[in-house]
Image (cartoon, rainbow, N blue to C red; front, side, top):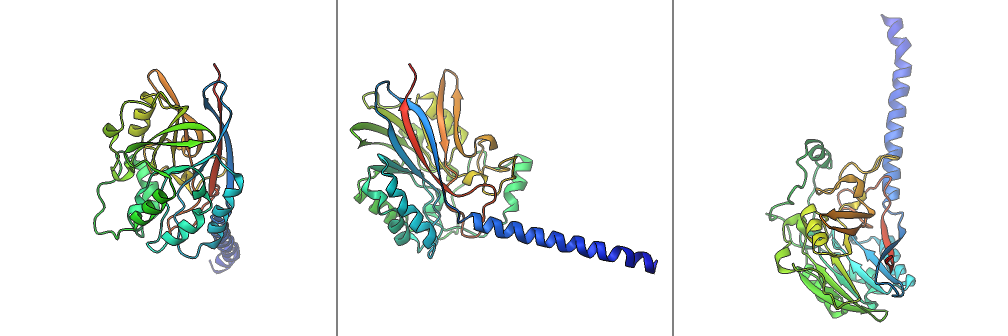
Length: 316
């Protein structure tokens, strides 16, 4: 037995070493990727025939933590795109002390017309949780069917400081309400909801469909829960903008996301897709966002992003 044990000891040790090295490599790559910011570009045919194109910059899920200078500089650089308007789909914070850095990062973008909704992490500080919980909930089908109940015993983030600064810059607050902005000579009607992930959405307060006298109508929400998408699509909104999913955050190469952190299917976890209800089809754009929860600062096969959507005339 002694010689046989010796025969297998070296291969076993080698296998363990390779496994450890592979895990370390993946961890390093995931940490590196979380700081490899990208710009996604998509075209969406939602304008009236004859209208000139509009350039919409969507930023989402910044999850700012004090000291994230690379992220801050990258967000500032997006102003160089000269978008016609900006939509912020929430979760700006992952640190109660992060408000000044969020406002510094978004400062150049606040010079453009814009609008915003908040996500749960704007309201509440993050808690340390086991990431495997999301995988387990996905496997059992129990994940996020209706969102989470009211948070208890969780520190609050100073969301009102963000609100006041965004409002002062002229961005439209779309918290369970409607708003309007003018961009590149176009009148844009916006309808937004508070975050469905923590059940703050109140669709009855904004129901009735888009304003028909505007050049364009958009729907905006942080978390793309199906009940919200169904309502927006059924009411006739041509384009719905959302975030929240982080694109799955930890994805499998050549397969995609395992989780969405809501009841949206993984096939639409990021990018442009459609959402259908009887008699109506809306475009849906879900941003993978440019940040992570401060306790899980990694991404894999899902780089952080912002999106420049070029809105063009629809086919007649």
